[in-house]
Length: 390
Image 1 (tube, rainbow, N blue to C red):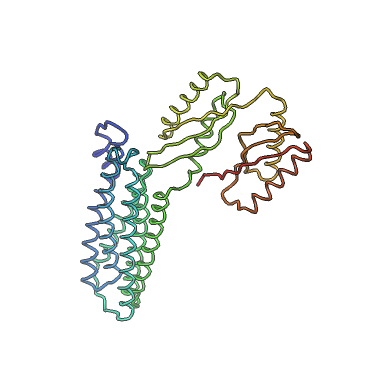
Image 2: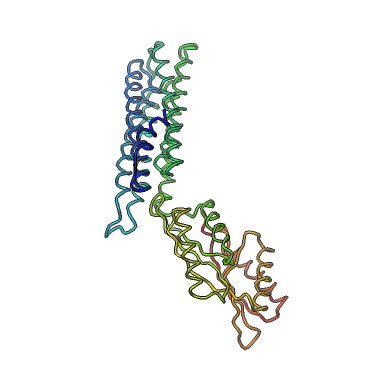
């Protein structure tokens, strides 16, 4: 069914750009979500009211929230695809994160409402009515939710949409909620124990947990999250495959929506590289990063003296010292400045985000002591940078 829908609405059509194709995926997924959840909402609420089941009614109301979320996703996808304009030169892609946050707030509001209803149901329980049709409806609902969750997950993997990721997680939660509702009904049928309101309470807490997690993830994207380890390592590995590149540092990525990122990086080149050669290397790197990672890259070039034996010795020493302290450390931009004494080394150290001021202070002292053991009187000016990976 999933492949059939994608083939009909996506694969058989021609798109002018990858952005248009991504929008088509988002709108198709949102439309499928609206109609699927609307169907589940109607049959569950009607069923729950007919048999006096708070758990099933709560599950139906949760599907109503999913309808609203899909509608929000539909509108968000359309707005996020708007081209750049004078007020928003980097486009409107972050609207998708905002709509995901709105969807999570709806989920949280539904959870709170269901929690209150469940508490009232525990205080004043009602008799439940049931028949075989109710059980069949719940089983069918579980099947639809399972398919919908897998559908969302597949499209999410194709277009990397935070809204669809949230929808997939929510659909799996709904599947569990419906199973728990069915379980409580079967317990009532065979053992005559009323767990309905308690199950509704559990379902409301599950929905609340889902909503809070989705809100946290969307807020992180809006504020600005760290670079993913996969993207960071992929870009660094690709650039360092160029034989002219001696090293890289200071990779910064600014996200303006899914697949809409701008970045800058420093690449180290031999100091004898001509300006024309360096410019050609930078152009090749920028173009390849855009093609492979859909990131608009700007390259800054740092000259590295590869012929000065003293500089090479200093680099080897600092590398040995920082690795001795912590294998995760790195350094860059090392240079020697002569003065009236033994001179001084100036360089940057990149430390993990968890390093605090005490860790950094101890690291500085360790480096200074180790350098002084090898070169008495040689000063060090150390600039500390934090690793920006998320």
